[in-house]
Each structure stands twice: as structure tokens, then as C-alpha cells.
Image 1 (cartoon, rainbow, N blue to C red):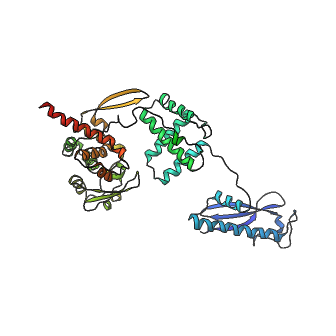
Image 2 (tube, helix red, strand yellow; image 1 turned 90 degrees about the horizontal axis):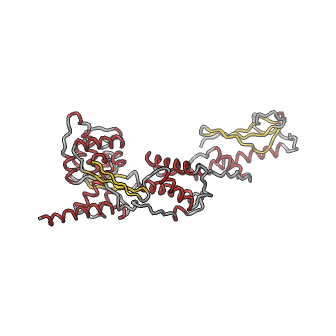
Length: 419
């Protein structure tokens, strides 16, 4: 690691000037006092040492000061070697200064970070380490804004069970959020508390003990928006008007999600090199898990349609942004007649609210993944096999889909009663 270490005098008006060690590296420059001063007339700038046999006004000899200069240079080099071998990087300027002070018995002053500073450190470090998507940053930014509105002076010291109960009320009454959204905000905040505890910023256990019961958040009332097999087949074969041909590419990508179970984030980064003879291999962006997904005739046909079309970064499919694709899906669904009534039920505190929409108005890229799971279960494929394709980590996450299939079976059996 290239660096230069020079010694000179601080440009002060005093007769006896402090000796400065200037360290330059990687475009950075750090000035450190070595703890001695000398008059300019007794300093040899060429060799960067005190003139032999000279003494400063404190009766400290030139030999003593020069030994201190040599020791300081050795210590700085040791610090760099330590970072090169152990950290595989250059020290930051403050790290260099603190390490030098520690080697000379000076304890760096402890700085107490505010609650907000710790939260910012969390989003920065976790975001980098876990490769957060933009949406995750937005969600944690929303939680931060709710916390600020709730109590601008919130600290780890005044964070109690009662305080979290008050925050819960704030999310209900002031922010006017649904129970499901409140639960997500609390879950994200508890993630932050787990991290803060692991870094010794927080000493409590609210991330483990605080478990509010919110109606409608157990998954039993959750509506899983998906396409039936008949709707999927009708959409797959639909021919758009000539002035809407741009929707065909959106349809192809959406159907690929419906026949593979991929998330939007994973199909967006799917490359040709991920495609093998009879399967694709992806490392999911959300969980970093490696998944092998066998191809069926529908997913194969979509890939073959674009195998000779060049896309930027060697992508396999013409994937546009998530927001634009969601907008196009609603237009596409409306044109294609995906307009069955879809009931959406949610809760605010204990109030049950129900709205009805045409299905096309609720279509998003994530409906493709849900469509895959529901239809795979309907075809009799075991949940354990489906989980291998989708990367779901536990059976609980499959319960909403299993419930849908059970309801479909009940409806089909009911047809016997009409004969």
C-alpha cells in the first residue's frame, strides 16, 4: 500500500512549534502531532529531524525528540501492515488517528450515537451486505418517518413495551394504516432492533417479546391474487390489437413468471448463461439461494421465441421496469377480459373492510409467482416439490395457496350435488 510519511512543523505563530507527522495515501492526507515541539531554527527540514545536540524550551533534547519521530514512523507503518494483512484495505483517516493514539496510550473519546444515527448506520450497512433492492430502502425510510412523527426524541433508553404500544396506536390512529401495513412496519422495526442489539447499541429484548395481535394478519383472510388455469391459457393465446403489440412482450414475461414461479427481480436479471438444456439456474436476489427450475413446454417456448434476439447485458427476456410492467399488466388484463370480480378484505383495528375490484385492476408481476404456485398445487404437485422451485423456506408460507386449492376442490365436489 503506497504511502508517504513526512515530518515538519505546524505553521503556527508560536516560537516553539509542534512537530507534525503528515501521512499521505490513497488520495488522503492525515496530520498527526507526535507530542513534541521545537523552534524552527533548531529544525532541519531536509532530513526532517531536530538538529543534533539542540534542545527545545522545555529542555527536551534533540535525540529524545528524534527517537520519538522514528517511533511514530514505525508505529504508522505497523498500523498500515495490520490493515493490509487483516482488513485487506486501507485504514480510514479517523481509524489511522485512533490506532496511533491507542498505541501511545491515548484512549479515543467515546461518541454516543443518537437513535437516528444508529438507524441510518443500520440501513447503510445492512443494505450493502444484503444487497437490498430499492423498495426495501423505501420501506425502511417509511418506518423512519413514522418513528420521527411519533417521537422525534426517541432513544434506546426510553424504548419500552409501553412505548411500542403507543407507536402501534400512532400507526393506527395518526398514520391511518391497515392492520397488515402496521404489522409490516412493526416487523421491519424489530429487524432494526435485532441488528442494534447485535451491535451493542440496544440492550433490550423487545424484538423478541413484543408480539401484538392484529386482526387479519394471520394469513387466513389474505387474498392471493392469481390467474386460474383457464385464464392463463386464454391470456397465453390472446392476440392483441395492432396498436397494442408492445404488450405482447409484457405478456411473454408475465407468462414466464406464471410457468416458472420466479420473482420479478429474478427474471429481470436472468441471463442466457442461466439457461441450460431443460432447466434454468438462478441465485435469487431476495434470499441469495441457488435454485434449479426445470422448464416445461410453455416456459421453453417463451425462451425460444427470444433466443435470437439480443438484449443488453445478455439478458434472456425483454423485461422492463417493475412499475411500467405493473401498469401494462392492468391494461393487458382489461383488454384480454380478465375481469372476474375479486374481493379484497382488510382490517383497520377491529373494523372489517371489504372492496370488490375487477381482477385486471389487481394484476402485478407478483401475481405470476402466485399463479404458478396455485396451479401447481391444483395439478397435484406436492408442496415440498413446489417449494424447491420457488425457494419458500417453510410450509407456513404455502398455507394461503393450499387454502385456495382446498376451496377449489370443495367447489368442484359440489358439482355432484347439482346433478
